[in-house]
Image (cartoon, rainbow over all chains, first blue to last red):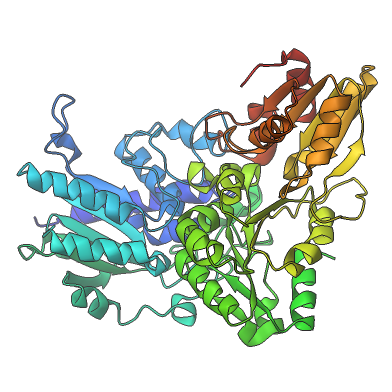
Length: 287
Length: 302
């Protein structure tokens, strides 16, 4: 799999459009904008180049790949990607937070493309391991990817899954950590330090790669890497929370944000490098 | 005075208080600076936080622990039941955004079985204040008792001037011959307004702010059942194990029959969205409550 310059540019253009969707979803009610912007390239890359959904033909789903989003609060990036991939009608994003639709702060299977609901952290590594185990039992070459947050790694259930998945030889499972350095409102290393993170996963028996999670070429390299038989794959993707919007990048207080229409307009301009946004909306600190 | 101010003040006056959170700092922003080492953020680790709280309580501390209500009560349930419950330790659980207060988060964040499961633990007390003033009025007694306790935290401002809290007692706002509304927590405010609307239509309507769901004020329930044609239980909770169940248990225990209409979430998670729209969709605005009270026959379930 070699990425051409045109393909790379297409992915980059898609990522910009996904960020536009994310920014628009932060208006009037808000969303987890920071954690959504950190994983845009991860999602776009996975759905464009890793997850083989075209192997699903309605009658036989046994050969398909799966992407599980365990850090469910970054659902705007997922839905933005779904729109760009054509799974979801763009108009539905405008139903954000309406009880008439199912577009809310966490993913759910009323939205086409969502494999499993999430929102409570540390659940989907184990659900993904169950799917991976069944794919093994049936002898398939399916690929199962689960995206977790880094704060999410506080939850013991993640590490239980890593132990069990290793014990069961689930080399068809890839855990991608969106390493954006933040818990909700505090840096991971200031609260519950995770580093050296590669060593932790290695000590648990995983094959570990660490890459720049905003670099499509690096993602291509990591996913193209042949795994080691019987070992769980881990990709630690170093990212920046709020990536693409310098006025909110890597700020502890920009976690859950609800912006005004005028602020969203400014942020869209900022995304395209035209100006630096002035944000006055108070940041909500809990959801 | 709000929750946070009361907590800090109480902790500064009592060395035994330890403030803990599983990285949910909404209610305890100023605690790290004010309490230094007696503020402990364990990260996103609800189970470990509860186990540590039990250890601290074993050493004579009174941990007041914080997390979103669903993760506190359900992720850590077995730790609460086993480490706090069996040992009957004074660990005080503050569950944030219970019930409808999780608005647009979705079912993963909806604590609408919390009353049922927490009251199922022997010795565990369960409280649901009507608003912030009610919360602050109740907490000194809750934190001061030697028992484990779960509080459905409700920090929304209310409009009603509450009577002082008497431990284990409900607040009887009014008595009514036709209907008595029994409610707890955040829905009190809408029940209060629904009561006014029903009274304006000429009905005699009682209203009870349950406050303490365990221990429950049996006398208040029995008196309402005896004095009203019909009781209506109102709760942002599944029907199983909540106030409707509590009322049924009390009536049966006293061999008393009553017409009781449950207004609950039945057997389903609610449609997520902004809070106002959620209340509208789920039928819990004052107007919708009035409509449902009038339409329901005595034995209807929803």
